[in-house]
Amino acid sequence: MMKKETTPKKKQPLIDEILDYAKVICCTMAIILLIFTFVARDAWVNGPSMQPTLQNGDLLILRSFLYKPRQGDIIACNAYSLGKVIVKRIAAVGGQTVTVDFEAGKVYVDGEEFIVDGIENITTLYEGVTYDNFTVPEGKYLVLGDNRQNSKDSRSPEVGLIDREDILGKAVIRLYPFKSIRTF
Image (spheres, rainbow, N blue to C red):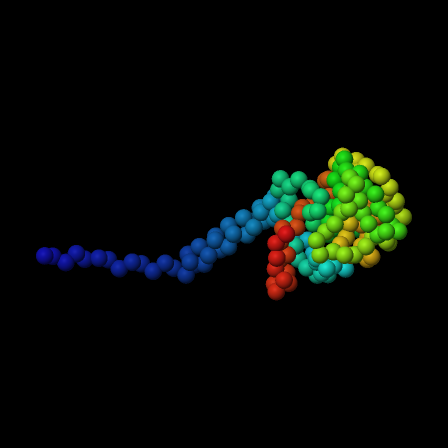
């Protein structure tokens, strides 16, 4: 039996290896860019308005692609009058009727008390907008912070109701701080 001679493989030049790695890195970055442009976004929590659910400095990943806002969702939205993105919870969507009883500290949506599990913060802070048997117009959203004693939200004339096109997306995961990663 004859031994088959094999030719040794040529070693790939260093420049070719570097170019291969560069291609992989570029493709990865392009995919990440596409995802964060069309599918998901990020938002930072700024201030105490969503405590205890979220803390100042939390990094959220938002689902923006084919997202339909729903009551109870935590969202990030543009607040142009404040000149920043705010993170709040949707209390009512277009077509729902809202009453805020500032004396009792309760929010009612379609006659039912709007309750968020784990949030016992009453709504007594009056910021200038009264909602008494008010129907939210279609395409608009009433948003509240979970820390209603320290939140600039739809109760404030500076924020008011949020337009659908100003909603950046729904929070789906708290990514930072790493020790507090969780999904919503």
